[in-house]
Length: 256
Image (cartoon, rainbow, N blue to C red; front, side):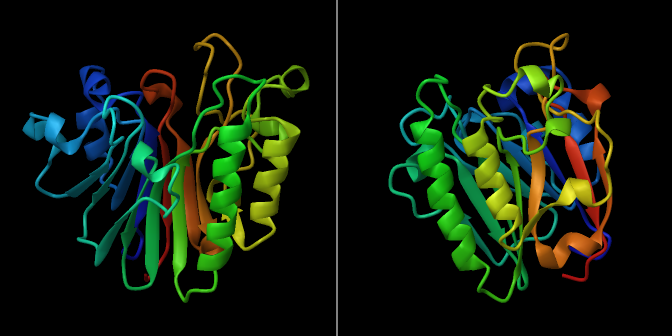
């Protein structure tokens, strides 16, 4: 990421389907240095239109090995990375297409899709993934580099991140167990990049029950603490919501 660089996040609910709603031209018009997409529901080879491969970006995709029509993450990088990492080394989850990472000399940027809880009575898969992820993130903090993880986390930490939170404490993403996990991450060398500059109570990114229902702020960039003071601006493009999620754009003053 270059000086004054920016990165955008968007959970697309299917890249080919979102294209029909105008996502593809819109997202590339934002002129971000790195674009992180989640829930692409495609493989690189299933995308037949050149619209998905603009000449000014290097595109990288990680899809579900068994069925590319579920999950999937992608990175669009203006500057070619030194390396691309597919997965996190988690045997149970890497084949599902949940993580891809671009490595630069002093910075790594990951696009992550946290597994959904299919039933509020069985949060075990999601928490199992998060606990493995927490251990991984603790280890990489020992490396002499900064990290940005852009994702559809399906996690909301504070009441202001969940509309009508007083009535929503038992929903997936806002349970005490999930909030405790996210809080422990923020105490261990990471920060919610969005909250470094935006402290409003009405910035929501996901409306799981529809546009006229309460929203959640679950899409964000979690960065290593060394980048916290370099965040210069953060936006939720609420008027540009594609399907159930809104894009998030965060700008950094960085010489990485």
